Length: 207
Image (cartoon, rainbow, N blue to C red; front, side, top):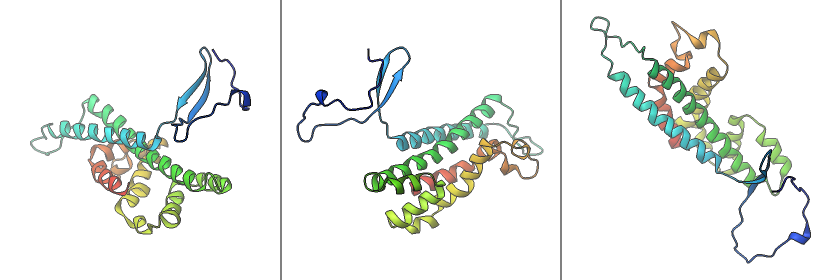
């Protein structure tokens, strides 16, 4: 059981390999009980887009359960007081928003690493620390030459609606918890109103 991580290469351990041999990039870690671990490197942006997709499907199911609630005969208002719907809606809404955002964070990082990682590490460090909107604009304008995507609905949804809802989830204020006039500022209300659908479809096209 290896209990120490060696960060310097040992030439005596080197082994030759044939051209075209598979190479696996591993993240090293030292488990407190089991010793050294080599952890496979997942495709993070794909993971997050799949997590967001799962949350979207669950939100659609939640919306269907809301529509099965009979409206008040006089006011025609549906009372959503089922704690299961409320809790699941809040959780899946959070997962939907955050994972969509993180998917693009990881995707832009992948692009920057491929373009700058081996030839200009200083540029990589410079760009990867910028705001997501700045990184995305740089990639669209300077790397893949698709500035037209900045005017797409997906780009607009990400850096207007979705980013605002993400901030309201992460930075709760009184007006984001309950708001009798500007209800769209409340993430739970925004999610259960069905607004997630339009944003999701636009975002998938953008990706």
